[in-house]
Length: 378
Image 1 (cartoon, rainbow, N blue to C red):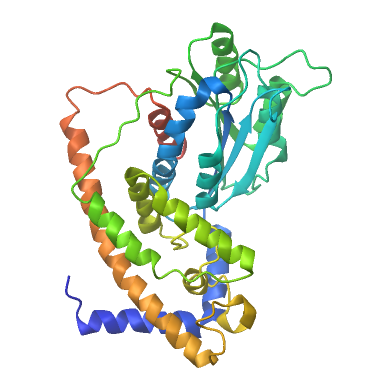
Image 2 (cartoon, rainbow, N blue to C red):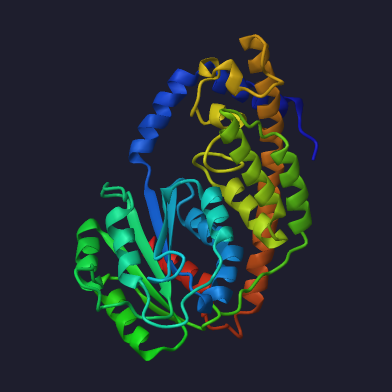
């Protein structure tokens, strides 16, 4: 699409303003961050062998779930946590990943989860739920919405001496304003009774789904390939910086992102394009272009050795000019991406509307989570 000189000049001047007025913008961002709504979601996930298919589906739809939150609260501060659990005697009992706005990092952790162990019941449900409620760093602001999805197919151990049990854990959750939803995979009757009780006590929903997590629906669109190609051009504007390990982490995230299935890459691009809060090609920081634009770092405060080799030895003015070019290029690509995502979403909406005469029951993991979030985040 042809861009007028006025548009390009405006984009360039916006980039200059970002670089030259960091103190003012940082103050404004601080003021906005104190009033911005926060959404915190924790997935407490049974990772024993019987959950293999469901976990595989979750890997493919986690960005779709994140996009549901963005669609409802585009300017929200979104944070997620992941807690895997098995049982005593397995490789681990509880494996937690903390509440964090680095959704890209959470996706990486989820991808590395493999279902294994188990083979009997009960499982370490109480221990995992206790970790989620008591040990995650939940925000205490009254505007923050806090939601847990407990996902499993086996009941908790109630026979461990001096161990926390779900009734008293849920009392703590109620005091913290945490909603607990219970998603049951399979049809075990004991699990069903306890999951229903957990949801009732936790002011959430009891949601039964098939053992395999249900059929994951992916609607392909004529715009998917263009989105992926354009995203690669945006990715080329990323400049890793920081320590060697920090730069390596950024590159690893970029590699993992590009290696994901195409449908996952499209959902990832949607998350990036539609957020109106911090704009990050990858979440979690470490991209010099995004961090300078978001005023997470001041260019003149970065040690020379933490910059990429291309920027080392340049004057501050030269570094600023280099970043201005990257910012202007990214801004133009983002405009194109926004148009593509709009076409993509319109196409999906048309496809879903055409299916309204024969609506399918929402019984897959991603569908029930999406439906629940839409209900609870209104």
